[in-house]
Image 1 (spheres, helix red, strand yellow):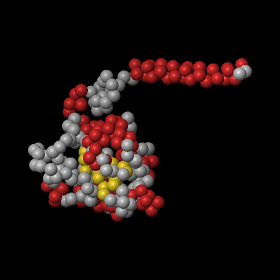
Image 2 (cartoon, helix red, strand yellow):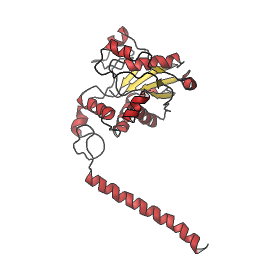
Image 3 (cartoon, rainbow, N blue to C red):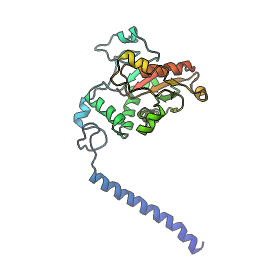
Image 4 (cartoon, one colour):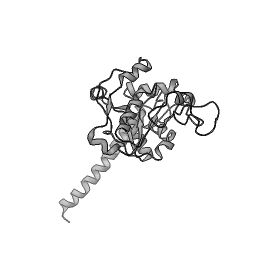
Length: 255
């Protein structure tokens, strides 16, 4: 082997080691300059996630709960029991599961992800959703995030539901489709609208594109969104997927 070739073999190796060392030093300096902080209250913590105080305030949802909507019951009424809400107004989707109750800490996290560009929260919240909804993903074929209209996505630069879906898909080893559902109507914000106004606002807003019908037809889908309030958006999405031939649609949300 010539000296030139030997040198060529050595240089990349030395450069790789130098680059790795530089990155390590930079990461150490960054960790000292910018210590880890709680994702909710922004107080310093020893690692990623929440501080002990905020963690203790989170209320993770566990059985017993409504078999359809996942609403917690104060006592165990037995298997398969539905809440009054599910009986009075059954949704188009089959089942819904949330990870945590809607409280101050959970609301802070969702708003920070949705409106505060806290994309770093998506993996943590996605893992919570993955653990909370394993009964739904056990037989799921595909995860479908609730899409944004292209104008809103352009303005916001990301879709928080898609980030959560990717985290859940990674945790549960399930494929995520970003093209199975399209928002074809630029709707007004749902915040501040009454239940009937929310339903009217999203009527006809979603459609399965013709080229994506093969992904939907006959498949068991799980819709992913960042929050469930009246359920109008998820209802509209589920109906669009069912019209395109989905076998059934379940729903997973963080709160």
